[in-house]
Image (spheres, rainbow, N blue to C red):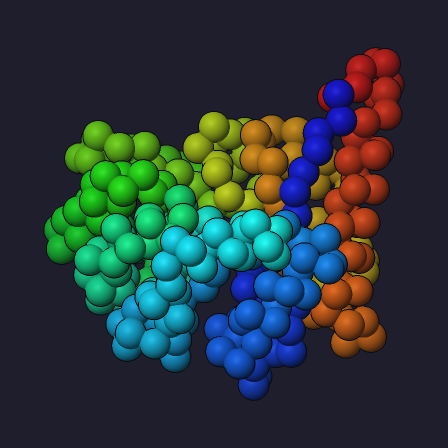
Length: 289
């Protein structure tokens, strides 16, 4: 049976880019983006906290929002905002950010946040074994995971670790906290680093609760979906979707200068849908998956 997906974006992808940064909090356009999302058929926005508009400096608007605001966005604009990415972590450091977020978990839960993504990348990379065994980092992460769980919020890790490294790291955190720790699968990051996202989906199938769809060249920058310069082909995308249970796909793709942001979103949806159509046809054994 053909799977049905809902399509979302990482915040800022439906409004003009802020400066030279491919991903920045759209301070002047975040409400406009929500209204655009509804008209474009985008059903969810993954909210981001950045160094300029984050939790460390208390400048992110979500810190002042109420449940009534969340209900308005969901019921009037028909857009879900249930995932928060702490995108200030790679710049400001993991411990600094989660220590400034932990006291806001109850407020975030009341607003409707049900998943927090921790991007352990770049300056916050856990690649070195010493980082994964750092007592202060582990202690802060475990406290955060436990406190988030008490507010019915999942913690999902986006990392640059290999399958084996990530599996061991998650096992360590889960044993210490007695909580399930989840995985955000970012197809572009994995492809850029030379990892196989299909192997990841097979390894972490039931732990993957969030998928960022984007394409990238090996060792290079993100590239638009379906333009032939990247690695996220239809067969690879088919295999990824086949092994995961997520029903929401969140686009974090490169912008397409020749298209408007809404056109790029619709192009991305069409690219995924065409991959699903191919997958829904009988293969050489007559099997539809």
